[in-house]
Image 1 (cartoon, rainbow, N blue to C red):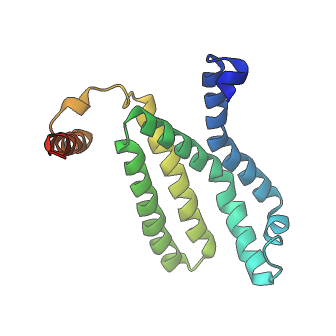
Image 2: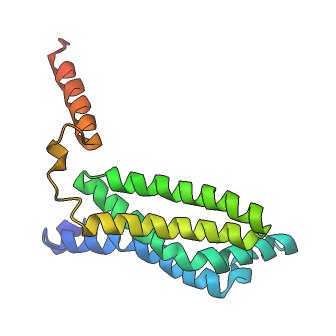
Length: 170
């Protein structure tokens, strides 16, 4: 529809603008939720313990939603570039950090804030890992041609499956 209404050249502008939603929505929501956590939470429940814990979560983790949005937008861009190694690695790192630190820190301190801090650290690790990989040129390296590359192995399996499918008589 965009091309029909505004021309083919405007499709790139529309696509870029739409992709900016990925980092902006978590960033804006994170800021709003950090400033007014009780108002957001009361949309779902008025129970005091839920409001207290949810407010702590939004005040501690909410400011880092922008890192999640950054990682998410770069994840989708990496998918378009056919380079998913680093986004998937970043996702596993996020889980490992959140679970590892999230288990160790509260067991030592007995504090919910340390658990929430672990979740915060996981979001920062996620966004920054993908950003560092993209900025270092991971999309443009020729390591895809290396037989040791996980992406190359997946590409080879996919290609051989397609070749077998094409050779099979109908």
